[in-house]
Image 1 (cartoon, rainbow, N blue to C red):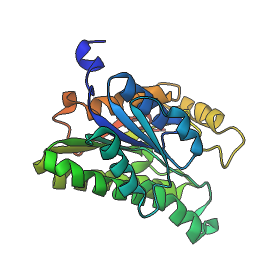
Image 2 (image 1 turned 90 degrees about the vertical axis):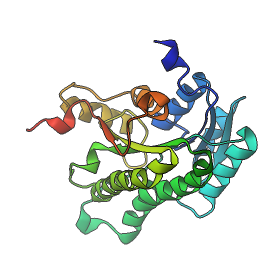
Image 3 (image 1 turned 120 degrees about the vertical axis):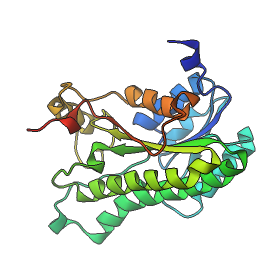
Length: 251
């Protein structure tokens, strides 16, 4: 790896949501390893295990009022600035629409869309005066493609893709780039609350992609680090597909 890649986020300050495990944890560790200071936020208290010099932690529900303000304030208090926001936290419900309650729907939307909106809004407020910054939203191939029984998740990720594009247009003049990743199957704990072996399900489902496998969280973290860096200076409002070719096949 070139020195340019190794040092791509050196001395920058990032917030990563959903940081206790999976993509969020891998991203926190990668950004920190490459010289960034990170505030790792998660509703799961296990996020506190990431605390170390250069990594601050916050236990919070990103969908709740005040959480975005708190995490941005923590970044400024501990590290003096904010350069990168990674909206990664997500929830999913597996139910047909006719069986889904309003509470199910809003539970997913509150984290996947509203949480990203609130954090982006508060991050942008402190990035704008600096005329620089990068916001990376972890979207999905479900931003464009439908899967039975996960209507709320698909709708939320579609909304996140559109939030990405709109924010990109609003913030480009302030030197802030907003992009997203259309992640496919990644072996994480996303499904652990609704099935016995969530990572195993994702591992098997990933075999349906042309590449024949699901991704490891570290592979998505690499793309996040790139989009957060100056090497991605011409990426504005993009949804970078990282789904092993799932979205370009017809079956």
